[in-house]
Image (cartoon, rainbow, N blue to C red; front, side):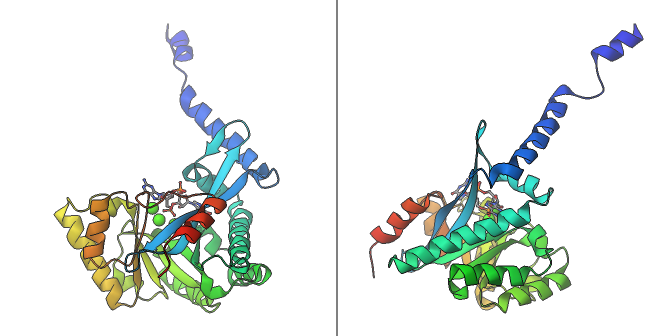
Length: 279
Ligand code: C2E
Ligand code: CA
Ligand code: CA
Ligand code: CA
């Protein structure tokens, strides 16, 4: 009858239920991840197309859960953002990567620009610039050795507020980069109001090079206009020689991607830095 039918087909899909319950459990585990030493930072090199040398590295967060193993940042960063954890976690990444950068500097490892991702949520934090300055002071690295990557989608939500905030950050002497450019449907002229040093072309655009004529023209224009506006350009997600050759022809400044190296541990990154040919 109707009633038993209703019992057989519950309103809530079990899978959906398990999934949201899973996320809730994961969120509570994330609270302990820092204390339990489950977080780490990996580094992905950025290569100058002009010299072929490593000029920078993006710090990327990793979480090794005790029973579930590696959890993707695509899963846990949004969790951190909606649970107030992104501030302490973001500060931990910045402090850890800066301390590592300083340690290598003391040991005579070749210098490079250290990039750290800043979540849009962190930009809402009161006294963000003061906090970053404090972390820089504690680590002892030069502000000019640090770059913060901020996603385009966040910056365009409230452009007036972004201008104000980014100017505060710029005043510290650090560099700023627009991350995932191309995914936010904004124009470069619009973003020109922001004090940005570098633009990162999103992987989804690089992926279709050089086959897509349309994407090729778009990337060429973005690079040209960025240069006109005094910004350098990094292409992310470069996986093939053909993509590299194309970006070279288009005058892109730097590349980042599996073609050269995936994100690697601190020890492996140090080895990459030390083993590259010197000019
Ligand atoms: P993102 O900032 O765009 O970082 C680049 C992502 O692309 C990284 O994924 C990197 O491993 C991956 N990648 C690099 N080269 C290639 C390639 O050639 N092919 C492909 N298919 N992928 C490539 P990851 O480490 O899984 O991070 C994913 C996202 O999580 C990041 O995207 C960033 O938005 C966020 N994230 C990671 N670490 C942090 C962090 O410390 N703070 C914040 N706020 N977000 C972070
Ligand atoms: Ca990034
Ligand atoms: Ca990116
Ligand atoms: Ca991306």
